Image (cartoon, rainbow, N blue to C red; front, side, top):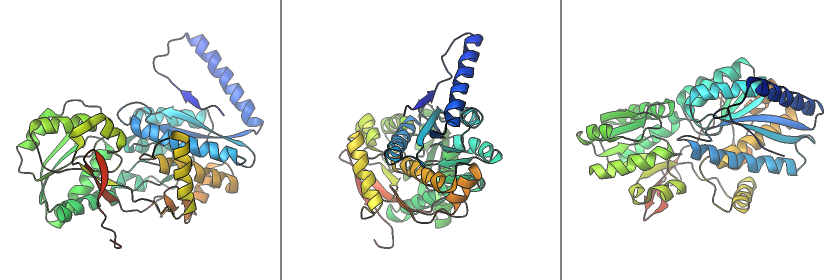
Length: 387
């Protein structure tokens, strides 16, 4: 089944030609859907822009799941198709994308986005249209109040950021921190949740600086941080920005521990950044129990398909597709039916282990902490009761 990509930028054709093409595509889609040979769901992802790493990781996980669903009979005999829209990580683009998926493609469920700002912008539209929005990567605490049609299997910043604060205060024995964060819902959510817990523990935030999404020069903010009496830096940002931020921090002579949230550091950042990422400590999702058959299946299938190790969001995105397919199979392809089935999910066995949604439609999982040492990612600290 072909993947449908829609691109609105850099296309210059006459209005009459566009109208004819849209009419033709709409007729073809309605005819195909009427024939009942497929089930179409949508996906809004940052396939370009500073969050493109997350978008590509998510797409790989979704495509692997889609192919597996279709290889085992599809959804009640119908092929599963995913229509992808590129949000570029921006709210206004996400709004246009989800409106198109709902009005043109007639989807009842949309997967995404991987970024919080875009997801927050899309959530009210999904709610208003009784369409499920299922995010495998958005972490803003504000999404806990996004309504009954929103779900996510990636932990909220309200869970992760306080854990990072406790690690910095207790494990690193740091009492004064500077925060440098991307100025959007993701960065704000991390900054606020980290600050609240760190100050509750008795620590002090001695400097707070924000930078624009897609910024390339951070020297002004770094200079202000350098002049503060900090012992560590908390750095929530997007993967593409991290390489430049870390390089400019190193050039400034700052040598304190640098701590990041999850979804920021992975093997790809190591390849891009080289030595400047050495020593960075970051939160990471707690490894799933490989004794669970669904976990070991995902790992084996992903490695065989892509010839690499799974990256951040590939497992949550894979599970999102598989779980939605299960819900549609059992409950039907309508937003309310899918919403009800997801809300009732208990201990679903997937790539991330067992998934159960709380009353806010989200999972509750604490992170572990890893560190870059000698160019490799190693376990730094696991504060679970068993450890």
